[in-house]
Image 1 (cartoon, rainbow, N blue to C red):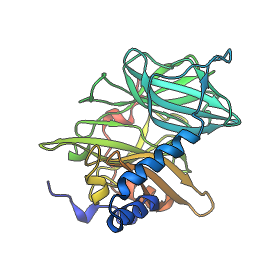
Image 2 (image 1 turned 180 degrees about the vertical axis):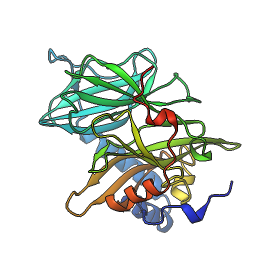
Image 3 (image 1 turned 90 degrees about the vertical axis):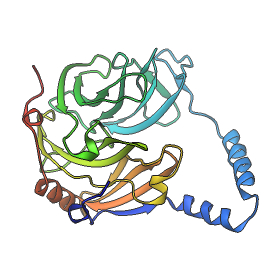
Length: 298
């Protein structure tokens, strides 16, 4: 598969998490360090107390499993959203204000659903959450939907945001990534797009801009990926060929954005860009469909 280098966003710079590089160098220089490192990690993990989730009554309420967590602050509360088992793949939510007590909230949706992303502020007085209805396996389909809630417990007014694209890198399914970033142009969304190859799925990072007041409306949607697996740590790992956006840190004054992404489900990658550059790139290469520009209800 040949990538179109001429339309790639070259302004996004990659970095591999420095701790991974340090470990890699150590593995080259010391025989048997892998086993020693593994033991050290186990010992340190045992020393640290796990996050203990509780229900509203204060009783311990741990998820059977949890992965793909996202942390978003809305007003004075931090919300943790993850994928869990609720008699099938579903979304779990908890809240904290002090990072000592983590209280679980009712599951927002029935199975099967994944890739939940909470907006960092209320819109029109409502909490907003993106999600991707799925099945309980390695879902071969998926569109992004928007739901709203007045209390983070009961969710409704579901709207379709956007579906898979015609472009090769997102022609199987798409899903949310990092929490949307509010800009003067709209909500800047880094999402993931998936294609199928003879060697399995490939996960790339795409970009879109949603309307500020009606985020189910897509204003711009980049027709080419922002990042796709090309570095060794993106191509080789527990799940090969994955770049999956997880979180961002952004500075309004400078416009600088740091994108943390999963690389091959094994490493943490870090990419840098600036808001004005990535927004201009998405506008320049935008290709929205009729469904994208609809309010998302039928």
